Length: 132
Image 1 (tube, rainbow, N blue to C red):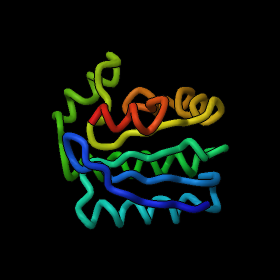
Image 2 (cartoon, rainbow, N blue to C red):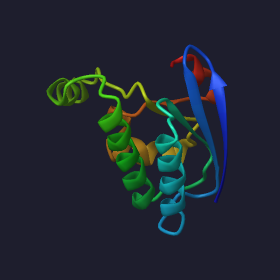
Image 3 (cartoon, helix red, strand yellow):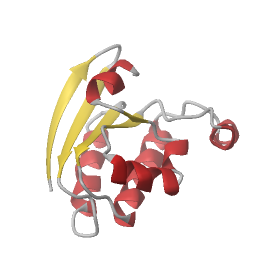
Image 4 (spheres, rainbow, N blue to C red):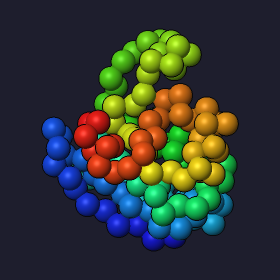
């Protein structure tokens, strides 16, 4: 797995992480560590480009969940109660961590595991950047 990082200026500065390769048990730690480093350096809006990720395992899902809560601890857009209620009602998505371009298989993993209930997966990077 390889990653490239850039910053895109839209309404806010968005840190764009392009992932190339699978996010699984052999790569999730490097993925999570790299994105955590970006957060430590001040990234507050992060877009993960999954368009070149063919497969994501449960380890990749754990990494996404960890990154979500890491971002949430730094930038809380709603109270925990409001967030949980919004997730249950389908009205909440993270404003600070988003996904783009997941293929059918990765999208299905995100949906089956319920990650689509709080992490938006937009069809492509351009659309995702416009959503920030």
